[in-house]
Length: 314
Image (tube, rainbow, N blue to C red; front, top):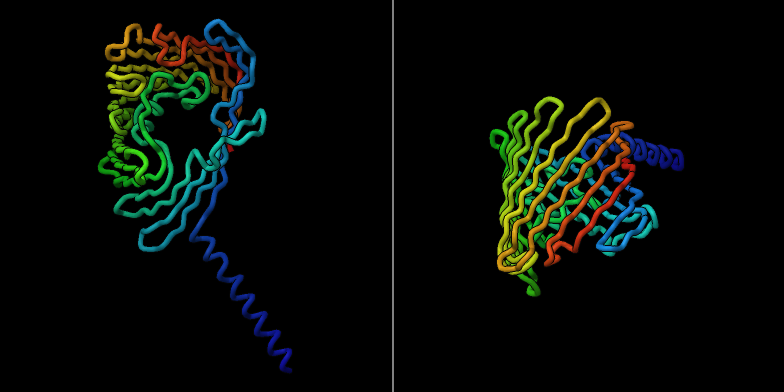
């Protein structure tokens, strides 16, 4: 009889745990996601040519949220980069992103390692054909942010506008980074601005994007100091996309002015691309990209590439 009672107690406890499990699962969730983006390219750098498989920022990530009640939520995001052609991992594990955050009606507080929101609000927003990755990525944007040891706060939306402020902790070994970003959306019009300062390097940029039926037009203007070389310069980029069924036609043009007193430091870059969506998650694409660097060689020298690729999101 005692064993029977003991067995019934254990069974009841097990059933109670099973009954509580759906409630616990309903309060939290974890998602595995990623992107594999690889292209075959015929590249020319200076006078040298090479055919290669090019990784375009492939990654795998994990993110999750927990509902703490009362409108309060905790969350995390971990993201790791790798090369599909070799299987090799990026040098720093979780180097792309590793953060924990707490959000609610007051906004969002973030702690950890994550990209500059000023960059996302401006340059990344108008890089539509391949998400600013690989050889066709924006070579002229001045990215002056240090992304590690970072604290950030993002406001709730105010009539379509959000703001974020971030600061890194130098931890006694380096100067802190200050990063400010603003985004505004009103129907087809999207606006953004970003400011970043690290030591004596700083940048400020404004961005606009407008959707007009099948056309999307965007661009940004950036003014920066002491990034590529001592002195300041102005950097402008325009982009456009035309969508026709599963096809997308892209053009992207950038121009950087002379950097301070550095002679022959102007540069230009342009990309022509075609994307074909096989599904919501998979596309094939081709592009031609070219960077015409000045004699000063601030951007790594002249470069061009013809590419055929495939991108799959999961």
